[in-house]
Image (cartoon, rainbow, N blue to C red; front, side, top):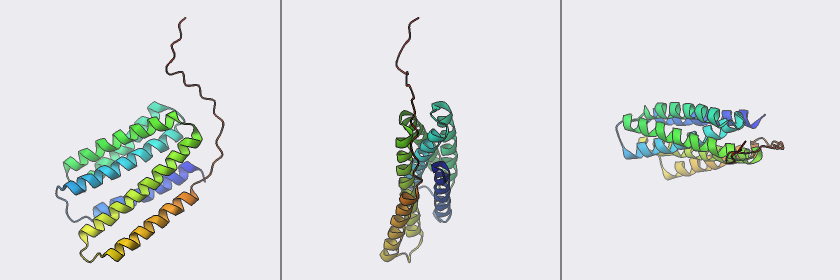
Length: 187
């Protein structure tokens, strides 16, 4: 299985986890904690979108930036709907900013290093998603105890380890990309 397909699978699972956790949230009023949670999750999704589409669109900075910003803004808008308009705006623009940075970073790196950055982004996204799920369950469920938190922490560590182990190992293709971004040719 190629790294891009594996990444889409992990990304889809994280989206389902976060949306389920946000949907179960009973307190839909403005709170700074919800705004920070939406900002953090939107930023990690934006980074992963930028990394993934930077690899898929093979060093085309414009296309990878536009596509990743579109997905990040859509994710931020949908996540913010579970809180209020200010959180929605924060999630949208934080995701767009992170997607731009992720796409720019991948375009500057060789493919093997880009795949490693994508793996790190997926691990960060999974850890963040499961942290948000734990925080929202803890906030909404009065019977949630510290032993449940330890179980969820153990599950998070196991899931992160499984992603790390199962990430496809691809042989890097030797690329001879000449970056003449800063040279001027005088005729």
